[in-house]
Image (cartoon, rainbow, N blue to C red; front, side, top):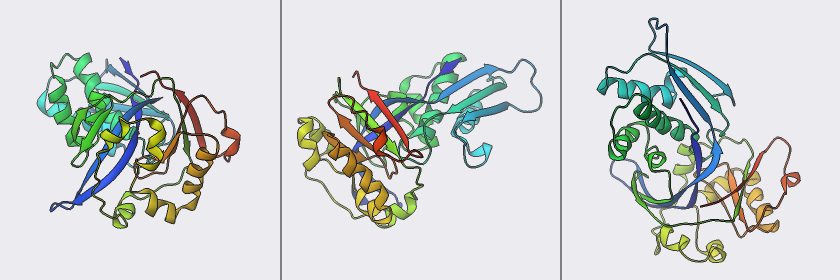
Length: 277
């Protein structure tokens, strides 16, 4: 069975308070985009001592195999559903990692969805979201996989209407690894008068002066190259541009395909997507 985990962008990202548990409360809108990995699982016809035989291709995946969220998702469900058989799993990575696009979280959540469907585990969306939350704060979003307002650590979500139909989204990723921990150390708490979901319900032409990512200030100070991407996207005609998550990917929303990849160095990842929802 094959599924195609997709990426997300943040439409606005405000850090509203620091919690007693050390985490931060945030307010954002998660919006799914059609940049996809490929995840395939088949039952292992010749099981050995391992429950999972894992292979990968595409972009290199940092860290140990055991830290991969797809593998963690399998072991998480195996505890509750002992009848899950040994599997062969292949992951083709296309979504860049550590870039604010949620690719790893998507892979883990889609693994839960795949195992549930393939092996008829009978989980509804709420149960899948509960398990996904054990993998990471933004993993439950990829169970819903539609525009949502997110609060808390990102796990409190409410579906919203947010259409970018007929728009083109341009992604530019310079391949810079931004430390989330370092970014949070420099963040300034900024309670917002308007929720991001309220702002995105207004005309997109108004977003530039209303919808902000609080991480842009500290990240652009550390890496001016990332800030320059946003400036170039606006200069090329974007109606709205922003960094997603803690970076380093910057996206621009255009009324039509701009075809501006030659504005950026060849080592940058550049992609354009037409949005139909």
